[in-house]
Amino acid sequence: MRQKEHGNIVVYLLIAVVLLGGLTFTMSRSNQGESTESQLSQAEAQALAVRILEYKTSMDMAIQNMADYGVDIEDISVMPPTFSGFDSEPPAHITKLFHPAGGGVNFWSMPDSIATDPTLSAFVFSVRNFEWTPTSDPEPVFLARRIKKEVCEELNKMVLGTTEPLTGTNDPAVTANCPDCAEKIAYCLHIPTGDVYFYYHLLEVN
Image (tube, rainbow, N blue to C red; front, side):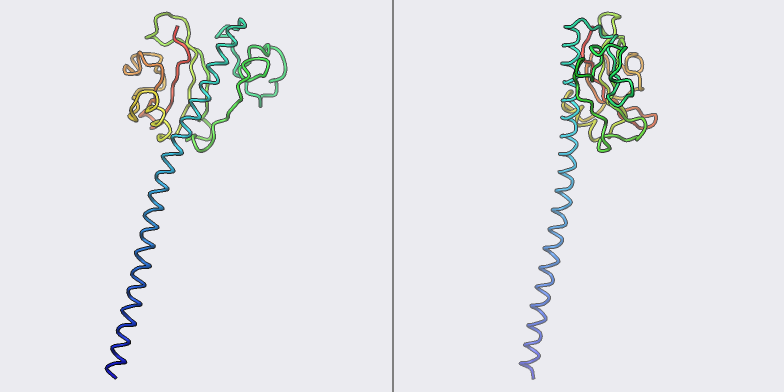
């Protein structure tokens, strides 16, 4: 009888060991999954930041080519291909940033993985003068408006070497609105009002 009880105890101990081992393995896999997911999230933010810089570069090259053909910066049209009058003139196709006969840039609508607002988030090309630049001539500017913090931080790290964004208002062209933005051609800007993030990149300084 005692041998049977002893045998049962051994069986119970073996079951307990197996269950404990399974629990430990499950917890280990769970922790690994959490770590992988976190790493993938960072990797995704980095990949999206690289994609944004590539898009900016394509605009930069297109604008330089358009200038070589006599198109003035202030005459560049950013009409998207989805616009009903995209294939009509005026404006002349050569002045259209996204037209094959103009800049030839492949239009990229901001994806949900980057955007924080379904209405206001967008990639924007604009022309205006930044007060700190040498002349009063306008600068062409690439802007990623209302993007996710993680993506903006990765962009800032790539252009300024730190994930810590600059802080100011949504108009850094006026130096008083963002003193730290002066003399910088690219940066992530955190706007406390609304807690939103913008990425600015001057394509040319005049």
